[in-house]
Structure formats: structure tokens, C-alpha cells
Length: 565
Image (cartoon, rainbow, N blue to C red; front, side):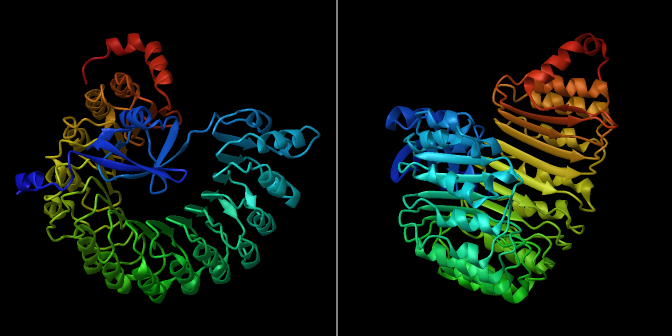
């Protein structure tokens, strides 16, 4: 059956990916699993689209990622390095990333700097606000947005742990430029009221992408109604990404936002977690979603009470969508075993899916069995998280994954806090041992004993990985385990671009840390490194390859004299 599944794959070896940029859309031929740097080079060569940042359904595509036929990507001009206001005004490039400090707002030279930025002619502009005082006064908010040139089609306003008051948000909403095709308001802390959200423009007629992060804003149901009214008035919207978690929406507010999304929006990512929706609210959300026609869906209903009774409505809604990418997050929702099985069967039964992300952590469900599934032949990305479900039985569930397409390129498995951790290794081997095309692999578990972790990782050494992430807490690795992991990582020395190894509380001393670092240091293509090992007050932590190699150089003599572990 495995051979049949591999041969019947619906993913062509060569096809086209769609790239949209500033209203322009092109079809570009690509092979299955084409590395991103290679794809970008051919994009520049064949279409003159160079020096851009690519994103896939709202998330930036990293250099370790890949592109496949049928991918829908959004491109924006790559910004210059993060510069100050005065420097940004003289950048003369299509994209500018500006760091805004308090001194940029006040002072005699600031007016000239903002004027230069207004005349820069850039098409993509990002403001990164570093201090709360920048947006405290209404005049500052007006100065910030009045500096946006009329040529700008993409605007991002991000804050770094700065509180945006409701008055400041109101001024920002009133002064949004009307010509925008892409608007991203990324606020880590904001106070939103009905009045401030009612100040959003009557409709940004050219807006195609809307991304708003307002977690913990306290907007309530009345504020959500105003936000929904704004979304419904943007007639050209094709992508909506909204995070309104912990905002006291209740059923009425969540329903208002869902009803505002038009049927022709292609990508919807909606975070409604921690809004006290309850069973009736989650059921209403599922019913409101039935009119959506999106191909990419992400819905987060975590921590909204025992909403398990609405799983059937949610599954019926999802089953009738023309989806190619699906993300469902339902953490701490008191789902029963039967409800987990129902949601599971719904996700794997959609034949056109290329990506499935299913996060069911913290439901305390006794998942001892899942029915074998006829997985989509087109599946390329799979992420599953059954953490904190004590009754989860990895060995018994493994057969449900036996039909996963052998062309899978991206795998994430989360299994923290389950009782049968001894079965985790056999689960991963039984479910994914035959995969040969994996490019990205992320594993997250804890308390695995008996030396299973190194053995488990060696099972992936035959894959051409470019991105490998391992979080293994309290697995009793010690020096021998760290050395074995280092050897496994070294086997990807010619392909690995990103690596993250979080191995704390494993009894790893200096000898094991050196052998682990030696294996990582052999990977010459690495651009991103995060390694934590050891224990006690001074663990071994590296954030870059240069620092790791420098540390190894200082201890080279000691490494050479170590006996084999």
C-alpha cells in the first residue's frame, strides 16, 4: 500500500507556483520541493522580481523552506536594513524599514526627517516603534502616518511591547492612507474600544491584505462589530489575518467578525482563543464560516470552554470548503476521545490538502486509538501536537499514520506531557520511518528514557534536511546522547541551513557539549543556530556558528584528548 500511495501522488514533479506582488500576479514554473534560494534566483532571472521577501498565508517563508507546485506566495520588496527616520528619507529604495525612537518625534530636525521620508517614493514601508512614548500623543500618531508617501502600497506598523492606548489607536485609524493594498497593524499590547475601531476608514478600496494583531485589547463585542463592519467594506480583500485573542468578544463579537469575511476571500487566519465563546458561541462561529470559500484556513478556538459539542458543526463546515491548507488549534477545550477522532478524520479526509496543522494539546483525552486514514496524496506539510493528553498511546496510534504520503517535505510532531513516553520512539519509527524526501523536521517531547532519542534522530539521517529542530527536555541524554546527536546533525553537513537543539536538564557536561558542538560546527551552510545544552547555573548556549567554533577552538586540546563516549 505504501508503494501505491507513493505512485499515486497528486503532487506533480514540475508545475507552477503563483506569486503576487503589488497587484501583479505571475505563474512561475517550479519543481516539487524547490529550495527557496533557488526559487528566488529563478524568479529574478525570468521575471525581474528580485530582492523581495516571500510569505505564505501570512507567515514569512524562511531561507530553509521550499516551494512546491500550487503554492500561492505573496512578495513584497525587501526593506533596507533597519534605519532611523532621517536615513530612511534618503534611502531611495522601494522598501524601507524604519525604527522609530522618542527622539525622532520631538526636536527641530524631526520635521525635516519626516518630510524627506514623505518624498522618498517607497512602495513598502514598515514602522517599528520601540518606545511607548512615541504613540502616546495624538500629534505623534498624526506625524507618523502623515510621513507615508503617496506611492506606498504596503504599510506595516509594529510595536515592541509598547501599549497603544485607545485614543492613539483612534487617531491611527482615522489617518490611514487610502491607497493601501496591504495593511498590517501588529500591536503586542493595545486598548481597543468601539469608538477607536469605529474610526477605521469607510473602506480602503484597494486593500487586498489585512493583518491585525490586537490580542488582549478588550474590544468586547461592540468593538468586534465595528471591526467586522470595516472588514465587510473592503471589497477587494483576498486575505484576512486577525488575532483578537483574550479580547472579551463572547459569541456576539466572534460571530460579527466571521460574518464580515466575504465568500471570495482566499486566505483566512482567525485567532479567537480565550474569548469565553462556550459551546453555543463556537457552534455559531462554525455556522458563520459555512459561507466562506477560502482555500487556506487557520482557525484557533483554544481555551473557550468545553466546546466539544460543536465539533460536528465545525467538521461539516470544513468538509465543504475547497481547502489546500488547513490549520485547526483547539488547545484545552475538554475534547473527548470521540471528538478528537471526529476532528482527526475530518482533517485527513480532505483530498486536496497540501498542508495540515492540527494542535489538540491539553485536552486530557485518552487517545488510545485513531482509525487508519486514507491520507491526501497531495500532502506535503504535516504538523500534529497531542501534548498534555496523558492517555495518548503513541504505539497504538502509529498505524493511523502509515498512509502518509512518501513525498512529505515538512514534519512537526509534538508529544510533551503524555504518560507513555517510552512508546514515542516506536511511534515515530512506525509512522514516518519510510519518509525519504523530508526537508524540515521538528520534534518536541520530554522524559524519553533508555537512549531512544539518538536512535530516533538517526532514523532521519537519510533525509536531505535543511531545517532541523529538536526539543528534548529531561530525557537523560548525558554526554553519550549529546555526542550521538552531534554525529546525526553532522550527517546533514551539506544541506542543513537552520538548526535548533534545546537539550536542557539532560545531564550533559562539557565533554558531551563539545562533541555536540563539533557535529553542528561541521554544517558549513548554517545561517541560523540555537543550541542549549548542559545543566546547572552555567549551561552551554550558542546563538551563532562563529561563537560555537570559537568556543571549540579554545577547547580543541581538551576535545582531542577525550576518550570515545
